Image (cartoon, rainbow, N blue to C red):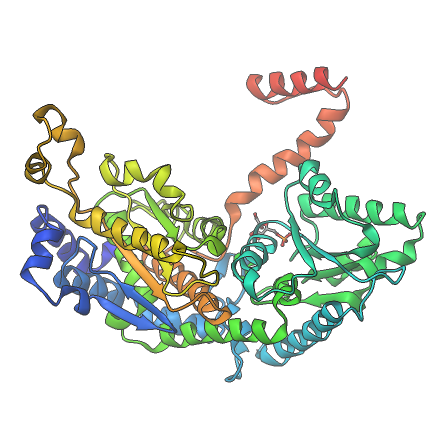
Length: 540
Ligand code: F6P
């Protein structure tokens, strides 16, 4: 059942109708307890959702929609290993990756408890990470590893890259961490420019080990290393390890499978950071911190699974997003971290959310008549303020936004953190309450400027706050968004764990590759033919 088929959905639509003139100013004035009532906590995070343009009845009706859609059962189906990724016939068990204490967790198709293998890989990763960190693992010529370069793309890049930046204050600083993803050779060339191959370890991260970008970059990296060793192939084993589900492909590439860290087809690429895909992160922050991160994930998982819907953080954020997306017509959702360490978090969420819920057919394959996943975007504060916040405050678009901040900074220098957080608090206040024309006039503003200086307010925001950015709070934050995406996909009745939409472009690119380099006749449309001809002429 999708959200529009529920009985409660008409109540949600009626709420929107009767709340057409909803005013956050009025709502806060009428209820001094609003902020307290609309604040929930879990796994070290506080969500204040009081600055959303909803009242208690709308929230209750949205929760009724979730109940009717069978959300609780769907959550249970995921946690208990059912094959909810039906189009790929797979279980969806990323929650098993951070189940440090419980179990067993059974993949329903195989009947096998997945936790023993999860723990075995985790402990192999720990052994390896410790060797690299301590200098026990050296390059082929015996030099200490000073650069760790992860080669991967999508879920095999965005997670570890984002997380290594996010947790940089916990990382071992005498090793440099870099991430090469783009098939554009510039990415590889500029990344390794100042690196010594003898001091460089490549982690080739690819679930399938067939991804064009990753294989190109891995092959180029191998040539770069072998050039230094005069073509001595024995060097590969000391400078390359693999993270993959495909042992045969790894062996074909020439990496010893003894240096391969596996994961499983029940881990979606965009959900794979807490698997072996996080190896670069583990080398950066060390096994203990990595386990703390898994603990943060696990705490949010437990909250999501057991908390009543009204107190459930991921569920609440998901329902608010649905209200804006499906009822009030918002097309996008902004994520605005007020912490430089989370600079890549919006990019990470783009894949998590848009690859999961950017679908236009329901689970039965019928074209949906309701909106599905929003466009997710954002930049760290306060940079965004000086770029696109004009539109947030005074534009014609409805852009619900998440503001994410920390009470304490890892870099408590001068007044920076006070200034940062003052902006953090000021922005949601300004967006919610605006500035009326009368208030503008009261400042003596000439009448011709009053309209320009007026802020209508009622721009909805969530505020998410934790004490400090730690591995645990970070893990809980990622899990929060994973589960938010899950809830939305469940109510939109789409398959959130496949990604067929990325295939067509990949297949066409494979067809075009030889066409760019030989003179074979072209059979595309006139636009594509002409563009290819132009490339051929420029490279003749
Ligand atoms: O972009 C499509 C995709 O399949 C993602 O889902 C995945 O994260 C990425 O490609 C990389 O795939 P792999 O890890 O198999 O190289």
